[in-house]
Image 1 (cartoon, rainbow, N blue to C red):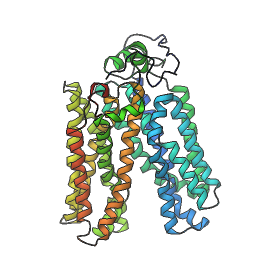
Image 2 (cartoon, rainbow, N blue to C red):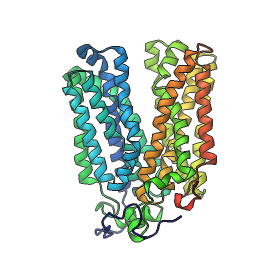
Image 3 (cartoon, one colour):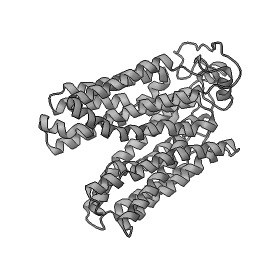
Length: 455
């Protein structure tokens, strides 16, 4: 079913869109699109700094606010309660109001939530601020995908997605030394104020700079033509010039591809969240790493995965440029990455700690190879630009679901006391293979309105 120019679509109440473009210089193509993706990568890094601030400051907070280790665990997890819940409405709101407005509102919201932590006087206040932070950060991934879909042609979309995703890894890595330094200088309360202020500074730059390609005066006509002719999902072209209307949010769930995006990302989330949750315990208690060795060698998989993330995005885009059909250009790195990530199971029977680290690094890098293609899928299958963020929110909900399921199942399997980490890592590896199945055989890389609905 196709959505044509009828105003009976999901956005009939929206005002008519202006397609008038500002005057631009001709000549050599400008490169403003890369500046735009760096801008959202910075926002993602700030989001992860604010998200990780509590982990670094929690010991200092525990001494002053006097709460137990059990409550500390609840406090550290509370962010994800609202972050997971608001993935779905967050994506819809980005599509409804556009990335420029929603990104600014989201960053202001979570920056206030971060800074307000400095005013808390007890456990309940910290929980409230973390819940606010989760709501504010929920639209980030959806807004990033929408920006990339607007500003990049298909043959550059996977690498651009890898760039903004690297912001999360950079922010996580930077948070530890930055917040530690701030606590030493201004205390834990001051650290929340400073990191919260970073987002507000970014919002000013965002509102001054960000526009869609046709409305951005720094982008010349050659770059706009390059984006749109290469498959960039600009609203002016598809909703204005072509008159195509967005698909209703509920209708997105009529297609097997939508459900497969959730299922595949859930499987991938299991292994990603292993490295966030149980990974240090595996190295210390299973492989015998000392705390010093954990600090020296524990970062190797994550650092290598940052490089693999970029290489995976470049590989997918290279396939597109050499004429590989788009479905294959996305599925090849996805399936290779997910199957390769199943090597995590070998870490449980590694002959030495060094070999265990090798298998873990190979697994994490393989999962990272799939990132660029995976984050490009919502833009590839969305019927219109105003469905991209909604599909991204739906897909990202799957990742959070994997983050909830994985640590619980692994903990349960460890609790059985049999074979230590063998069954937990076999479970994680099996989920990777299952995810590869969904991406290979269920996901269809073409607009949903060109696919056959399930019902």
